[in-house]
Length: 99
Image (cartoon, rainbow, N blue to C red; front, side):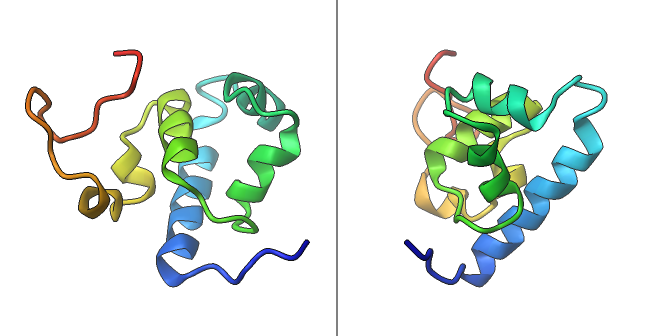
């Protein structure tokens, strides 16, 4: 099944994810396989399709990846701020489920 063409903001998110990955993978001792396992995905390729921009990132994937890469989800996709307005009790509106 062919995936749809990514929108501009989705392409930009993939580029930001790639830059974060390039910057942090060594210091965090991560491999694509390890990231996929930590995200509870079946295979390394599940991470790779996001990393290379072949599949659009969705909020759940962004939240998982941000936690593993130790960045804020908005660092990957700033447009999330428009999708998720601030909630009471959080400084910026983002609260990961296990915090």
